[in-house]
Length: 416
Image (tube, rainbow, N blue to C red):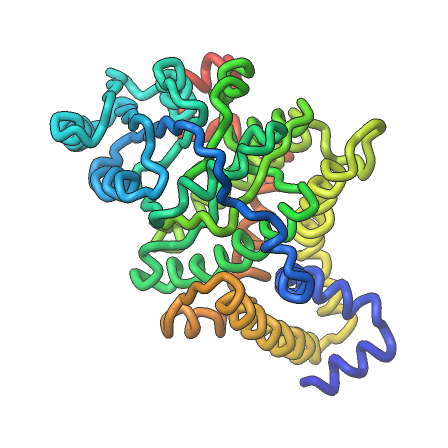
């Protein structure tokens, strides 16, 4: 198999390089190697004497089962929150009872209940009007923090240019299924490694919905989050356009629950991918390679998406057809050779990430790593191709059920 790759490298170096680009893995190799060689991940002391007050907002729709552990982790923080506000966004489970019980015990300062579901953005925006802290920390109900996470996040706001920051995320239920195990490896590569190197060049494009911190005065001045789909990405790009800096803080760790089935995972990623395409290209016009008067950091964050995400995804089916036409009966052997190379790169990436970020995905994660190139390079990329295609042709993000129907009707009128 390696002989075929070597032969291709001698005769068609461009095709070999494009093969590697298509399947993603080397992107994280470059990120991890850069961080390891130059020590860029530790270029700033994230925790400082700057100790602003933090208001925590937990918006939740039917998230009662994860609410208590999330609240408990916030009370174990080295930098204790000034207040915790829970917003029950029209839940039909035990969310309100859990939240009210926590308030009665003094663990929560305020509970806001929406009679009908208004959406995550509306829930956060409503709570922000009552918050009094210098910073707002928005948290999904299934997010659990390590004890120093809030302090690390708050530390970067000593820089007055910073208006938002997000933390490092791990999958808490990685042993529940093969899919959650694969996500634990994916998060270590794409979030821990990928965003660390992007933070170095100020090219972070999206503050994570699971846990992000905002400067409260800027948040209120901007009217809060957009109520349409993809609100976390939209607000992040809005801050960038306004000249603010947004940060990724790799030392601030939180865990969240990942989808455990192939279908639920596909639904989650389809929503993320459709929203990303609509917001980046329809709302912010980021398709062109260069914008006049644009900062270099903004150009880098756009090119990262275009060159390492959009182009490989849309090229994948045409690439596979070309390989079949070029190699004929030997096409499968060539792809197996490429997979063999990518597998070794993937194992190298995981080992380096374990050392750099002091995290382990365990034996189950190591087993999942054996099929990670297939998951990352084929499964997710095919899913992303269909998501992008459906958004381009049918504008399917307008029908996103993550946004309540009445909000979609108000935004898009008769087109929903």
